[in-house]
Length: 330
Image 1 (cartoon, rainbow, N blue to C red):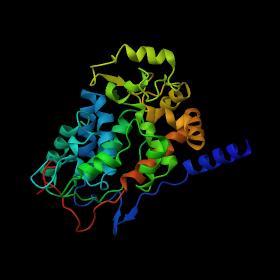
Image 2 (cartoon, rainbow, N blue to C red):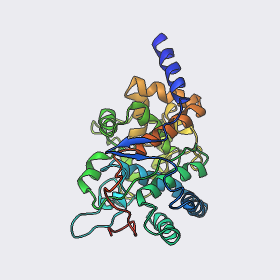
Image 3 (cartoon, rainbow, N blue to C red):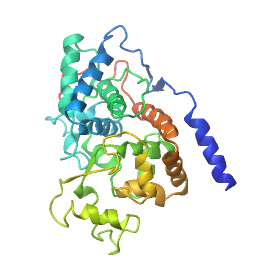
Image 4 (cartoon, rainbow, N blue to C red):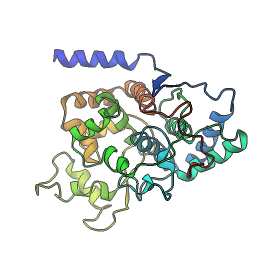
């Protein structure tokens, strides 16, 4: 009991610690004022276009947030995910985590076109993704943070990196944690960033095995509430309907809040990778309970973890390029 209280007190202090707004990796600095002189309207242009896109379709916010995550976990935050395939590499868009599910590319294209008109070849696609992810979070009711800027764009993509580095819905807890640690992130970042599943949808193909005793041992998934499972079966048949969409948070599906963690406590985490945060590790379970009780602490940590994630191995200085079109190298 004493150890649990100590951990909660430590997490409370960490949550209210000042956010680091700059970070050094690979010899370069990222800082929020990077475009203040070269393209002072950049942030407002991104914000305006994202706001219009989310107003047209709320789901877009979660899609953009996911793009940023899936980009950063492969070769760092370098917009490699945005590249279409070419003669020299295969696009990350066709990897297992992205094929038939990654979306929001047209919104990024629209932002890039507007920025190229305002200040040609100044704002990187990687920075557009980082800003758009923050704006998507805020527009759905989540926290805000100052986005460190100055990333440059990759000239290549990594299909193998996308297939192997991005956590999968059916990975074990240890596998997911290892994938986070390889990116310089820890268990607190894992739990907080998983909270992004408070918005958005998942395809039936990502969780069907939990509904039909397909967990590998022929037994029902005891970590899924039986009534919730019965409801999900009406939306996801035993075969077919792989692309059917289900809300990740059935309670407040379009609002960024801590209901996701409350759902986990009720065994209503849609993905196996969600529910194991409660059932597979004591430290992550304590974090789930803390964030379920304290929305403010979740918001504080989510903002800090997003900054940490956005700082994964950025290209800076003379590395990479500033793409004119986010889909192709110059």
